[in-house]
Picture 1 (cartoon, rainbow, N blue to C red):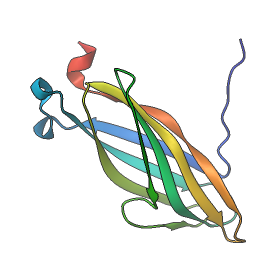
Picture 2 (picture 1 turned 120 degrees about the vertical axis):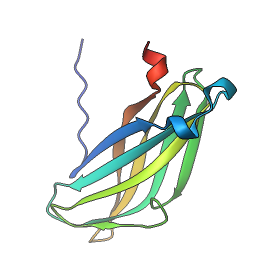
Picture 3 (picture 1 turned 90 degrees about the vertical axis):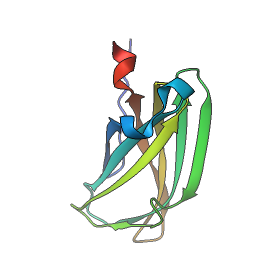
Picture 4 (picture 1 turned 180 degrees about the vertical axis):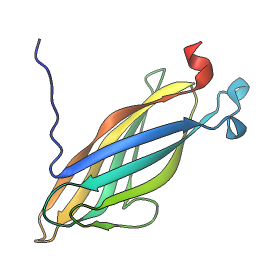
Amino acid sequence: MAIQKTVFPDFQITAKVVYIPSESRPEQGYHFFAYKISIKNIGSASAQLMSRHWIITDALGTKEEVRGPGVIGIQPKIQPGQTFEYDSACPLHTSTGSMKGRYFMTSEGGETFSVEIPEFYLIAPMAIH
């Protein structure tokens, strides 16, 4: 069995997820998750995050795709050594799910490339008992 390694070109993406009980209504099939994304430029050149593509999957296998310019209404330029962080949220109809996707970037020289957002999981506390 091969071990699969993913290399992210000059960027490290991490996610931290929190279930928000005060915004969730489990009895109505509504679970609300907040997440913080960190995008660290470990390369030697700056790049601008131009757009995003998310694939959100719930526990039933239902997929939703979200595309749009930038993140949280901006298109940040991330300098070498800099980490850009932002907070966002995601509602789900099930108590568990996952998110993954890509950021589409433009380098200083005008080249476009994408950076994979590794899959991370949305898990409500009641789902693990």
